[in-house]
Length: 127
Image 1 (cartoon, helix red, strand yellow):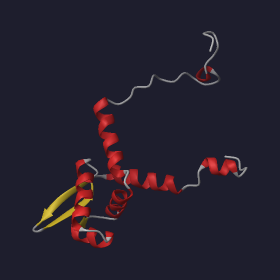
Image 2: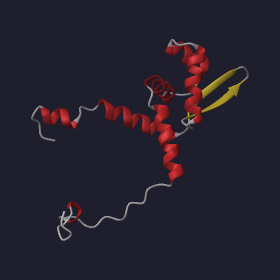
Image 3: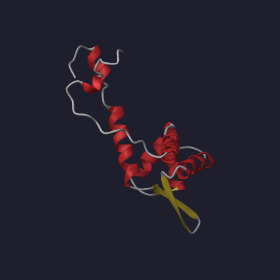
């Protein structure tokens, strides 16, 4: 593009402030959280925990999986700071880490459930 040609950002819109990305460490932590939640089985566990705290035994029964499998998934979610745990005698209970995680889950599932814009456009609908 010639130097004197306007960029798309110059056409009819006010200037934008410069982009200031989060610190590299913050981006790495966020990416690790997304990777941990990116497995369908771990995502399902997170959605169960969005309904409230559960002990490991409840999660094992609900998932129909082995204790070791569910425990390993929960450990990954805990390491990524998506869930917290507490011990009550011989039982370990898990819950979502905070409201940010609950909102993220709700938003990503809602977004995934929406009909995609490209599918509507392919059918001739206007956005």
